[in-house]
Image 1: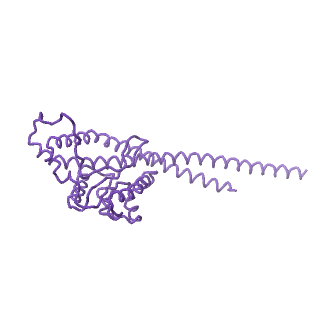
Image 2: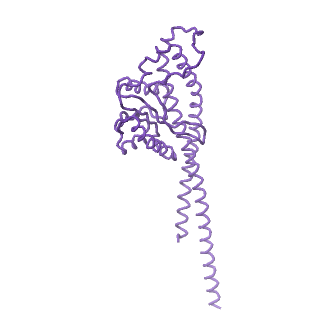
Length: 294
C-alpha cells in the first residue's frame, strides 16, 4: 500500500501533467480555429475552380481530353501523396491513416497487378515518413519545407508541380492523395482521392457551353486553369489535414486533462483516507498510553 508521502508525490505529478495537457488543449483549440477558418474559406474557391475546369473540358470536348494530364500515365507504378502530422499527441489521427493505407495497399496492388514496391510515396509529415521507413515502402520524396503548419498556397503549388512533373515523366500511371478530410470539430475522415489523371467531365444533356464568350479562347484559358486547379486541390487537402490534426489533438488533450482530473480526485481520496487512518491510529495510541498510566 502506498504511503502518505508516495500519494502526495503522485498527486503533485498528476497535477503537473494536468497543467501541461490543459495548456496543450488551449493551444490546439486556438490553432484549430485559425486553420478551420482557412480550410472552410478555401472550399468555395476549390469547388468553383473544379466546376470551371469541368465546364471548359466539356466545351473543348476531345481537345481537352487529349491533354496529357487527362490521360492515364504511360508507366505502371502508382504514386501517393501521404499527408500525416509532424508531431504526436494527437490521438488516433496518424494510426487511422496507417490503418487506411494497410487496408488499401493489398487490394490496389492486386487490382493493378503490381508489387508494393511499385507504389511510391511523396510524404508530407514526419510520422508518415517514419512509418513508411519501418514498413519498408518506397519513399520517392520527403517534403519538409515549409513545415505543414506553415503551409501556404505557394508551397502547395510547388507540391502540385512536383507531382505533375512526376506524372508527366512517364513513370506513373496515376497519382493519389491520402489525407484526412475535415468535416466538423469531432468528425474527420481519412481517405484516398484521385489527383492525376484529371477526371473527365460527366456528360450532361443539352450543355454545350456555346453561349459563353471566352477571352482569350477556351483552350488558352484551360491550359492556364488546370495547373491552378491542381494547386488548389493540394492546398485544400493540406489545410484539411492540418485542421483535422489539431481537432484530434484538442480532443485527445481534453480527454487527457479529464482523465488527470479523475485520477487526481481518486488519489486525493486515498490520501485523505490514509491520513485519517494514521491520525486515528495516533489518537488510539495516545489514549491507550494514557489509560496505561492510570
